[in-house]
Image (cartoon, rainbow, N blue to C red; front, top):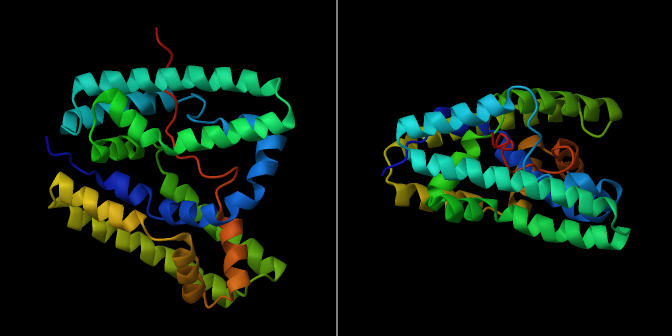
Length: 254
């Protein structure tokens, strides 16, 4: 089966991918503080299923089946996988409530390691290829995430200008940089439409191997920033509470 990439998947992470990568630059220094002060957030494998999220989850899986990206059997296994993850999340939260600060930090670190394996765990549980698993995870992300991130970038950069961290000229250059990245993502989508699954996987893997330091240097060059300014911008644009890589939770079993 040859999965089909949807335009929504690519454009939906146009700015998000870069921000998540930049966010990784500053996550390490406050990971311990985060795990001790907000232990429950560290165990947010899949996000709470509030209004509309269940519908988004079900409709996204149905669309993937209709397009031939996955089979109905795989869709059922995916739903079961996230129901189990949701139950694990609840159990972990209860366990964390009664843990000492040192134990919470250790548990949070262990969870982060498991969180990073979400795509491979999903692939194994539902019989998906690596490429299919990545496409499923992207399809299950909240809709219109790229628009919300675009608005957030504008607000955060405006705040940095107001604080004197960067100039308005630098802010304008950064906005142009992110818009260019968005256009590049759209061009990549067009390029990948004619690729085989193996070719897409190799292409995406190559893209993901860009280091955080290289991305930071790219940001500094684009905005005419000093290294210190680039780090401050990356910190300000980091998604709140760290990057949430997983999709919303599957609905409860009836």
